[in-house]
View (cartoon, rainbow, N blue to C red):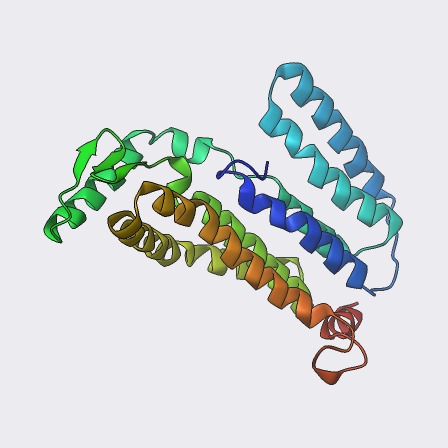
Length: 244
C-alpha cells in the first residue's frame, strides 16, 4: 500500500491509531453490541472476497476494529474509529471523470508554463518538457490529500476529547483545506519541473503530501506523550477522562 500514491497516505493512520489507542485512558465500558460489528466485519470480508469486491472487503477491517473496541471497552470507540481512515479512498471518486480531469489539469499546467515562457507542450495527460515528461494521474487531483487531512482532523478531535460528531466535523473542515493544499503542491511540482526535471516534480507530488501529513501526525503524538510541555500526564488522557 505504501508504494502506491493513491493509497500511501492511508498508511499513516496505522501507527497513529495504535499510538492514540495506547494513550487512551478512558474507563472500560464494554458493550455486547460490539460483537455484532465484529461479526458484520467478518461477513463483509467473506462477501467481498467471494464477490471479487476487494474495496468492499477492506472496509471489514475498520468495522471489526471498532466492534472489538466496543466489545472489550478499550480503546474508546471514537479512538478505534481512526481505523476507518486506514482504508484508502475509493478510486471511483475520480474514475468517472478520468482521464478527462487529468487532461484538463495538464492543459492548465501547460498554459501556465507557456505564459511564463517554459515552452511546454501537452500530450494527453502529460506535460512534455525538454527535461522529461510529467504524466498526471488520479492521485494528483487531490483526493488522497483530502482523505489524509480528513483523518488527521478527526485525530485532532480525538486528542481534544471531542465526541464522534465533532471529530467528524473537524475532519471535514480539514479535508476542505486539501483544495488550496493540492494547488500549492502542484505549483511547487511545476517549479521543480522547470528547474530540475520530471523526476523531481513527480517526487514532489508523490512524497510531499505524506511528509506534511507525517509532520502533522508527529505534532498530534507530541500532545499525547506523557510529560509533554512539562505536564505529568498527557493532555489526551486528561481530556478523554473528562469526556467519559
